[in-house]
Image (cartoon, one colour):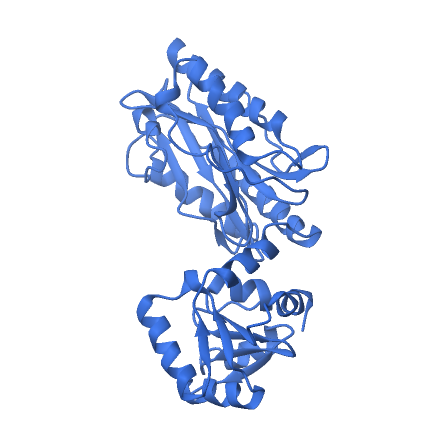
Length: 358
């Protein structure tokens, strides 16, 4: 087994003989293999990845530190594995199983003389492992961020009156993939004009006009790891009120970044941004958390929110992304992806945050 699977095996409680992992992200985390379907059993003396015929050959070439087992009849294959390894109590990945799936798995286990542990404990163990990133993971995220930034800089050259949000989003994705991205981290957000007030709006055929903000919330994936960045630019100069909103968000983000350090709580970081925006009179227009963890998934623990007292640790990767969104007028968000350190943070985002007026 590799370090991750052996670590998980070592974390299993005494009342558990194995863990069953089915989510795509966690299967990839433990085996480096990507598939839409698979069943990873981690026992105290080995890891076993069950796949169907679509993935057998690729899994045997690519899956790391686990034995690949082809199943034609899933129930029989699981029964054989449980019996041969004398497994009695198996933890389920609670967040990945639907109620129906869990009931089906319980029946399969029962036929083999085993039972399921249906708690959140396995999810907590995996979250504990994933929340602090290794240098290799951070390197992949750094590369994903570099791809994102290069695509952004090149796409800025295309902004002119009449270009649509969709055109800019498609151009970004094309450039990211051409530069080595596996995919985009999420459906890219490119909004202009009054539509920038929608934090997670969907690009459409709205065109850019002079005097508009254009908000880009974008990211790429590289070898399974995500980047996440938001920049708000303008075509020409914006009006005084819009500029004040921008400057408020920028200072709020700087305040939050200055608070980041191992040993500081997530809610303290959030408060530094939120209190500044409140004091500026825009508190009602900042409705989301200040940030979130990033890794093999775009949204991971911890949440940098006003109610999360979780303490940051060195090696965690989080975003810092306050925003102000005034309906019918405009919205501004500025987001960096950073690595928490013992004396502050390392910023994986290298682009300037000063307002770019094209």
